[in-house]
Image (cartoon, rainbow, N blue to C red; front, side, top):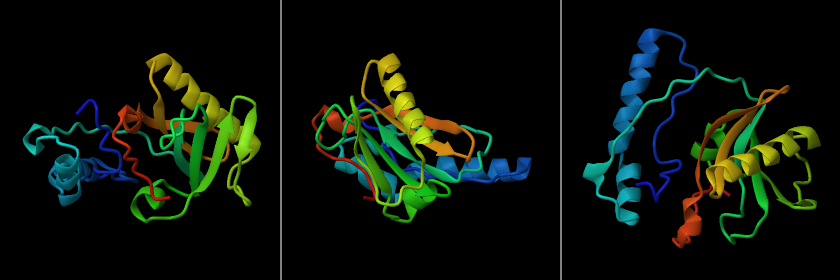
Length: 175
């Protein structure tokens, strides 16, 4: 599984406010390892479903105005360009609801392409690009970072290696 990210395959639960809710959310998250979506993905990428395990992480809920994903390299072409995708609100709109994200491509000399009506200003965009490049540098491998912007700060939610660059040619995206 270290060579497969399973990005978007498992359930996340947002806005949990008490212990009972946290326990119920943990059961949902752990159960999602056996969901039809996760099992189909495992079969598609040659991972034995019996080997799947789930850890549950509890994080403070950031109140995002904008959220999304950033790649330190283009996950489709492998080009040395950061790719940032964003939607207004929480990231579940991007992952679960098939919303068309705003998309930027950023090279070493600056923005190469940007959406017509960007939901993010230049400051948060630059911070997101700097963050994904820093994570990739420290990890010594291309990075896929989930982030949220609450109107004041960019928060890193999680990161994983970009596994599509390993030759699979498959990228999970709602774009």
